[in-house]
Length: 424
Ligand SMILES: *Cc1c(COP(=O)(O)O)cnc(C)c1O
Image (spheres, rainbow, N blue to C red):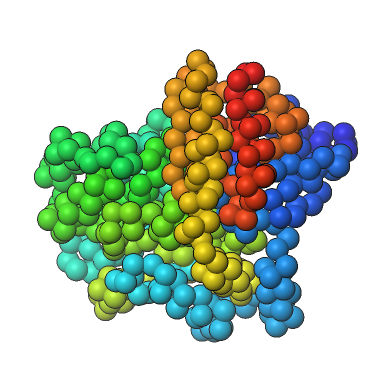
């Protein structure tokens, strides 16, 4: 085992990592239900759903069966000139589940690419419509939309290190993230900077892109539905497109199937990923309206300029179909309420701690915001010693467990967070 860790440390990059940093790393041998099993035999309750994705936990018999059945038929075929039932059925299901105006589906392999696709769709739409100057995007600070160059250009400029990549990143327009909390109303003054940017730069702007209701990786900010409603209204007033990046929030995580439903709005383009395949395989999708698809398809150059090699991979589509079946045939709404209550009750003791700035919960997401950034080197092993898998970043210790977590395991998970936060 020491050898595996040494080789990993010397040769293998991890997300946002440094080679040779010698930070604690834990080899996993298997995973089942909500438990991750380490090679030394320890079992950890998963508080992260492998970054929002494994909503039905691990090694799920129905998910496994769906994938095994698909492997017997075909694992992959190219999507240029060929089609298949898993892709078409999945597209139909996504159209049914997302807000009504979204009627066409572009499949890609990761969330970042789904965002690139959304941005290209917006630019091509305006180009075909005779507004080629509309190539820029307006977005919120503290956002996160992925790690490829287009997606990076709309991530928070500070945490996304825009100055480091200044010669290759498109300069976009930013406004401060809303401070009005979820459940509150948002005042005219809160939306004013966004309106100001639109008045000044609207002629160059193709779309507003944002994470609806929950700014996830950029700070776990839960903001007012009213703010999102006002953004939608401004997009209509200025004739701009709205792109909702639901890659983290989609598939019931916030208590609605999609977070934009909290504001009862519909975007012109939506991006989904992460939980789409229940965490089994990498797959993402970008959906848009018939108006936008038709404009792109009928205008110059008459094609949408994107086509991944592994587009609509049949195995990934089958995993997504099985995951959506499990989700939609369950009483997911009451279940997320159950998790929400468990997170609220279980994390409440953190409010009393001097090291804690805020505790907030929305749907299946629980956040403990600390006064100071955590020290990963010391805090990560503490969670493992408590028998849980929690991966904080910066000042945020947060949980988004698989939906099938029991009340008992949820209580153990939150108790471990209280204990570690208390002792660190
Ligand atoms: C994770 C995430 C992405 C990027 O998805 P990848 O699959 O990691 O490329 C984009 N947008 C949001 C909101 C995300 O949470």
